[in-house]
Image 1 (cartoon, rainbow, N blue to C red):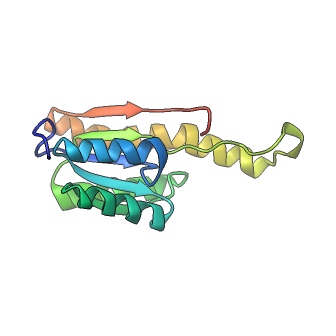
Image 2: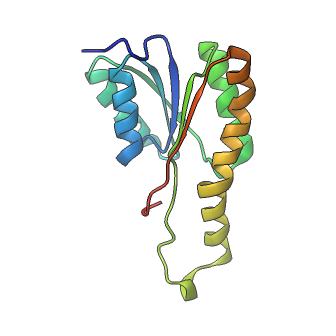
Amino acid sequence: MIGPRFEGRVALITGAGQGIGRQIAIDLAEEGARVVVCDIKPEYADEAVKEIGDKNGIAVSEICDVSDRAQIDELVSKVVAAYGRLDIVVNNAGILIPATIEETTDKLIDDTININLKAVLWLIRAVTPVMKKAQYGKIINIASITG
């Protein structure tokens, strides 16, 4: 049963196609939020949206490469245009370098910094004006040892 705790709220979760992000998306939907499942992999995002829908939640998928600031800005604009608000953001996307230091390339280092650090700051910067205008907003930043 959908609960009223986040009724009428819009939540955006990055890396929501699997793992912790997916469960957070499910939990927020169960509490009444309209959820935007953001992931770089469409199949994962679509599976999460289906699971939420099967539990009578409301969710849509948005594909976004959070290592690209322009895509983050576009994502936030799209969500606000569609819903008129953005109340909750969960910065969950992350990657782990799957190599020893000797095997780590410059590209892998750049990708890790862009996704695990810069993307968090870019998304916060993009949503802050929206949340300030609404005089409401919750931003949750998550990190784990697996990315």
